[in-house]
Image (cartoon, rainbow, N blue to C red; front, side, top):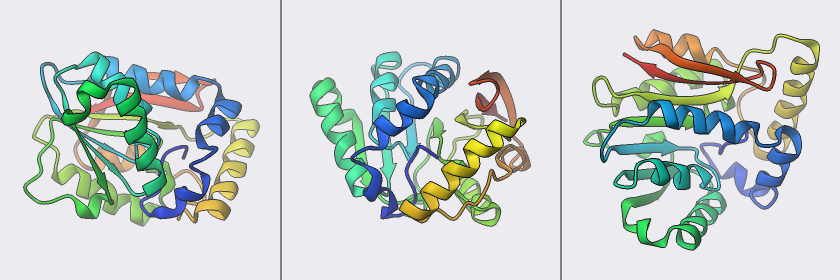
Length: 216
């Protein structure tokens, strides 16, 4: 959640999306993303896929850590994509040639595309289980062998207040954006099914948010 849906549904919340995230979680979600990037980005000048990157803050952190990286920024919401482009051009204009902004979903990735790292931040939680399986399978198909999968997302709730907060979030985003998920899908199980294991894990927000690097 707090990432973009694989259709135009998040166009409706693009204007207030980041303030809403900060209101609920402060900077927790950013800290989780930063952890995954710091411990998981491949060295050198990797070719990376960011899917569901929302308003683009992740791009600035990637380029700070790996100035020579090239990035495909795949986003289904045209409003989110516009915001991400504007952010990059205002904050890091010299890096604009290194980023390919693409409007679409995982279905728009060609069979020839191969990436040195896959980045999904607060994206996989949007899907119901069957759709989640399709999404991770398609993304894994464009992952170079041994390439890391950088992950930050919500963890299965452990307390009553976590269950309540997630329930409210799912109801809100189902009404406003039409996401298919109704509750937390088995993300970790699906990544493990691909033969991946979680490394360098860290929890945030009293265990409600998790970051990790999934590797072969």
